[in-house]
Amino acid sequence: MQIQTHPIATEPGLAVYQLTSCHYGTRAKGRKAYIQASLHADEVPAMLVAQFLRRRLEALDAEGRIRGEIVLVPAANPIGLSQVVQGTPFGRFDLATGVNFNRAFRHVAEELKQDLAGRLGPDAQENVALIRAGARAALERWEPQDHTELLKKTLLAMAIDADIVLDLHSDNEGLLHVYAGTALAEKAAQLSALLGARALLLSNASGGAPFDEACSRLWWELAEHFGEGIPVPPACTAVTVELRGEMDVRYDLAQQDADALLQFLAREGMLDMPLSGLPAPLCEATPLAGVEPLFAPQSGILVFAKALGDRVAAGEAVADIVNPASGATATVRATTGGLLFASTAHRHLLRGMQVCKIAGATPFRSGSLLSQ
Image (cartoon, rainbow, N blue to C red; front, top):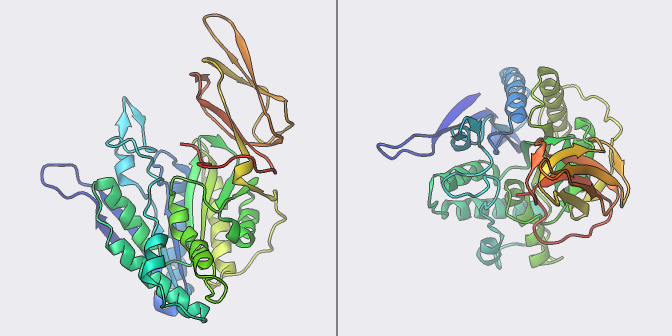
């Protein structure tokens, strides 16, 4: 096992940020997996899961039971971890720019369409190698304009050529759920079952250029661009895992989640360890475009009529917003049926703030599909 330290900000007289990555096994002997925790730095559960992963991977590496290379970034956002606003951690947005730390990652597909023109052929594996080399080169040409862009480049450079990318997050309040590209549905369903996820949300492009899609989306876009005669498989299984809610920081849950992630890697042939049976899935995949976010129609006290995990019918009341000054009550109703899988942890909202999200089976939205 090797630990690498990546300087993110080194200008004299300013705060210095460092990113730490842990490297297990060797790439020369197989495939590559990349796992990062808490890109949104105030989403803490993933960092605890990473500690359980770290201990187990160190032991497996010492025993020579890692097939390929596994890179673990146990705290992916040192900038966000350093941000506190009036005593409250603030790790979702960069205070310097207002940009979400999990948006605006470099998408290299357009560059690769030009760089690889006339170079790909009928051998899928040779195409994969050329695309990965081209993606690494494209990232090298990225010239970050600030410290947060440098952080994003550093993270993406470690993941862009991986076979498996696991981006570990958590919601404000929520059930465990998973986001993945539609082309990755089969493998994402296995991971979802192992984790006991209650929602698996699929999309070819969710909008905003999040980290997982910077790693995976280029593959199906290149496949479509080059056509049937030039095979380009979806060679990067990049998945975002939402580990319940921000307050679900518990040793038992972290151990459970780490065990499930290790089982997934073992099933992918990257770990020499006993395989458990694949649990029955707790959900079927649904389109991300079928997720309905509900918003507060007025300011006031949030009182839920439904709980996380409840099935909600179209038109059914989900919550009330009670204005404490006027006493007026506004009822928030679903317009589509589905599973209430995530909600805000706040109990006083301003008008327009998000109340919750419902996963429905029928797509009806387009454009930017992720919450800000």
